[in-house]
Length: 360
Length: 185
Image (cartoon, rainbow over the protein chains, first blue to last red):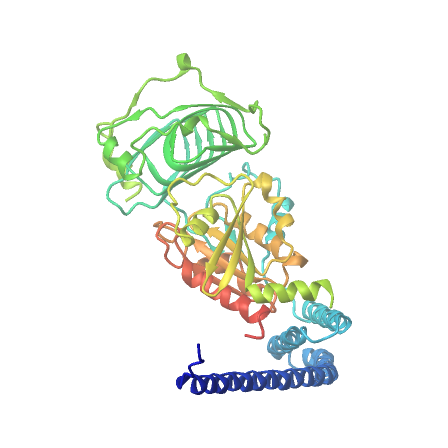
């Protein structure tokens, strides 16, 4: 067979070659640009490193300049204190802001500075701060009535004519008088009834009660109790949390999202909760399920998300007994010692107005 | 290159921040973290120990350490101080009786050297409760104006129950921390 020249073939190969050459050229170009890029990069890197040593020295000169100016400002303080003490405060504020500027400078530069420089400049800054602090306390007399002072003044007057008034809810810390929240306080041998209506109920406090019976009917957001002795406390559902501190010989019937019990002794708790109850520094406390009833309690329980028994009343966490075995500080109240369903009325005939007005 | 600078660089790359949440018990720390993270806040038990949450917030990754506030475990707070970028102090604005406790614990915390560089966000929580003190009143009680001048701090009123104020507070905290530790941005 004779070879049959294909007229198209040579042209095709040519095309092919041209293609190849183009590709080849492109590859060469790419390689050379990459080469250049690498060269550039390494040059840049080299100049970077020279830059960084320059940057270090320029940082050091800036740093020492501002340090000197702060030092001289600090030295001026005494003069100012003698001539015009009212200016001292702004003067110190200025110094403090220049110190923090300096600190910022160090932070900004820390990524290129050698670690020794970072350390030594931080040390300098903390020295400056200390100097400022010392001058500040020396030259400006303390005016604030600090927490510590308060404690010592209390100790200085231990023998007041009347027995030391039990710690009130209205503590004044520093210069601000804290208002009292709504609640029952400092009562003995009383039946205390409060009905919550509507949605505008915030927190409620029970404090310093002795041998009282407390009935809070309806929902509220938070309840604080402290210093109760030999009391019975019946509470409608609380939407938020209940905090109990220093109680003894009491019976509590409570429902809420959370409950925290501190410093409780010989007390029984009938609870319904959406989370685990906790006790701390407590002993001889016993737990059982919630057992309160009043007219409309179903609606209130639902409002607080507590219509179902959760079983959490028995899942007690004792923060003073972080072990797997049962804590000796609490136990489940035996069935035969539990009170039955407790039914409380909205009000007792006759005293309705007086009790309602306590809160509204 | 020292180990510290390597760690710093890695942190910078991943844009991580370490946030420590502390405050008295019952102030709402865990509820705040859960609310920010969009989780159910209706069945939270008092924290026995601590929780860690990793949350993406804006372009940052927040590692939030939520440490229990009961008196017994407050002494363990110090175990979490190292490497803290942002400190959140949570106050129950309706717990008027324990505000002096609250002030004392905060003062102790701020003396801590390992926290001296951390930005401080004070959340005046439970603003939804009638009778709660306003953020301005809380600031007075805690005497915040008397704080060390170099501390970056802000107080924000919030309600972990409704979620109000939480984003405002965390926005500030994250921005403030970012401007300190991610200088190159």
